View 1 (tube, rainbow, N blue to C red):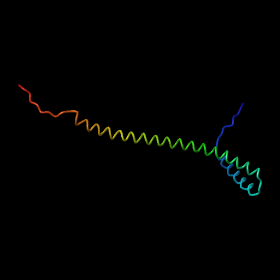
View 2 (view 1 turned 135 degrees about the vertical axis):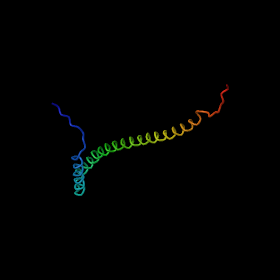
View 3 (view 1 turned 60 degrees about the vertical axis):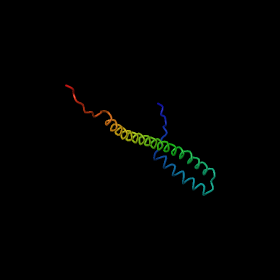
View 4 (view 1 turned 135 degrees about the horizontal axis):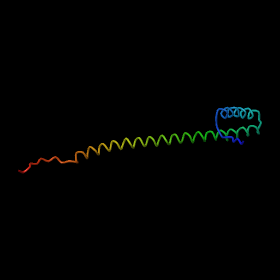
Amino acid sequence: MFFQKKWSFGLGTISSLIVVYFIHLYSKDKGWALLASISKWYLLVVGGLMALSLGIILLIIIISLIIFLIAMLKLHGFRKTFKKQKQKHSSKDYVDVEYKVKE
């Protein structure tokens, strides 16, 4: 059986980012350049991927809400104009005429 690792961001990733951030601060304070640069790149890559995925999710939610709002406003606006047109046409649909029948 082959098991495939899936990419997922969860509590473990967030806690590892916090730990690596403190490692970065400590190694920068002690002057360990290699460990500081490795931890910095880890923070940039993993934090960037998390920020990118969250940004895409938020962007999709915002765009769908904007589309929904536009659709609701158009529907509400069309109802108002439809009612106005219906009222205008209802008065023009018939002619009130008095007539006499010849006998």
